[in-house]
Image (cartoon, rainbow, N blue to C red; front, side, top):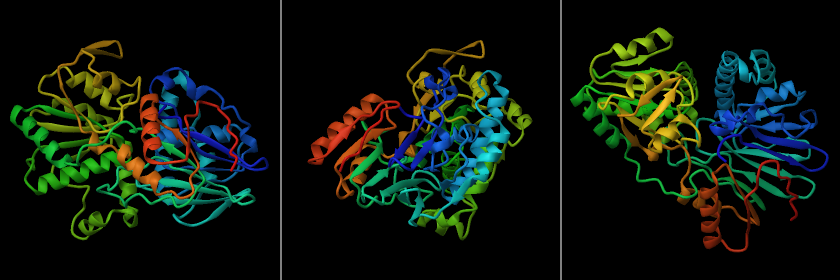
Length: 437
């Protein structure tokens, strides 16, 4: 499945966890986040977090509740973003009384356990030596290279690999040498089209400006929202959209994440570093930051063409839900998907062609135009995944994870076709595997 990322690696004496993410979509609805993990959290030696997306870090405070008091390692940028994500999740959990997973006190405890580490520097967790490599997925994201010192066995956890080259951040690093690879497979069955987001968005905006319609973009707060701001900045400077057309960033989390993004220019792409010398790439005329709920409520009263960028990215909650109620029934609305929609989420249901959806007891007819810009995905596609794994030397076994079943099966077949003499496994929940080299 995609979401709920979590892997435990043990040498018999020490053990570490790579990621501890929340389940989303149908698994969230089925209460998977409330189930205690099948391990003694007190016995963990340490934890490594690949990046700040909720499905990779969202259950961290459960560790504190479970008695884990050891170190949690991640990059400095990830720590800044993880704090935003966990505090927001605790707030949402409190508001949804039937599914309280953890509270602010738990977040406070777990934040004190975080130790930041730089890319390409070795550090030890028990009997393991660990190194983080830039995975090019979001700001601060990492691939985890682990060596068991006693045997010399090397295991690589890809984390989420980026759709590299990304416009905002540095490209994905190669993973070097490893006998075992645990790799994501989110888009293992498809190839992204050539990146032309600005051109596609310009056409969408032009139609909205002509009809006076609303462009509604459910967006992840981390990376995707900043990429959209960057694109709108470029479009306004090039005259591809009118300066007076308002863009509402309706997500307090995305606003805070943008501030964090500005604190780490050393992680930007070369092109963005150049632009930064003369311009703020995340600010432009008619950008409205909806930091308080009252600004969000007023958007429906704005006459004429407008763009709304709001969370959550899969329409599973957040302010986008209010806008869905207000605008999905209008044929002049364009609903633009710019990221992965997990099975069971409202975004996936709409994307799959539902004629209507029930939101908070309201039956909403869907008359809006649906547009999918899959090139904006922060995930590597099939070709990029193959290119990444082919660069790993000494590989003997690959575990395909973080993907729905069809993408995993398709990617397994492609790897078998293109790489000789390796074993490919498709693990399932709570499966334990002994690594023998």
